[in-house]
Length: 133
Length: 188
Image (cartoon, rainbow over the protein chains, first blue to last red):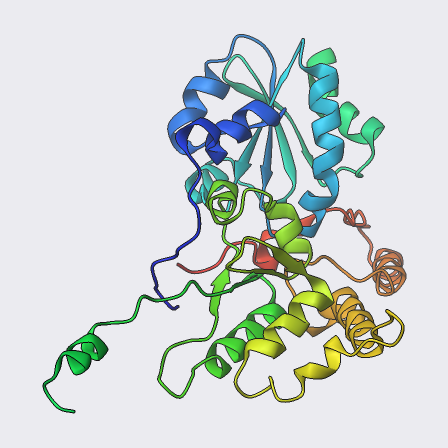
């Protein structure tokens, strides 16, 4: 790949992409470093979407998941893990494909849904059903 | 003139102008093939590239550092070219821009600017061609694009037939799931 210094304007710290991402997105991205703290040690129920940006199904479900995340934000946290980067996490949780939703409560996996239909009702059921029983 | 002041000025390295950046989906075999072709074709006679060809990657923040309006989901859905002036061109317009830049194709790329009462027939043809290729690229080996809609009924019928012929019926896999064996991961 060609390496060359780019002359594009770089974002200032005030409007840096990472800040913008955390402010705008209802779904927070977790990494191997933050997974234990944000997901396993969380006080309430959590749903983690194992996804990849190159996955067409993940792209299809993304706006729906954003909508669902806002609907359940009072009771449940929703995170995403990019398996293309976090291969160890994907391996640890035996992810077979994307998108896979894994639900956690008190450090334990309580449910798992692979490839739900990209509709609000379907995704909402996927991320809330395990905590109802 | 040798050794004069003017030759000293000429020897100073010229500042490198910023180059357009072509982003391509490196998880898609079709896009990867086209991206590599552009990269090979982009070499000028001087050896410098006329365009930077770059995979989209996995980090939304990195993309937004190139252009704050660039969304990683959009980048994977449609080909993007980032111009040095900060503008972006997508889809067929991006393809036309690449053809204008490449030394081997720029001789015929004038046709995409041809306008007849505001209507650009060659550009429209290119836009349609891009849309068709984008829709059917799973047929040519795009592991990350899902399955084209025209194939889904056939896949369901095949699965249904297999469940009929086996003693132990297997559930039909959901069409909204990309198996990892279909390579969402790539070697680094």
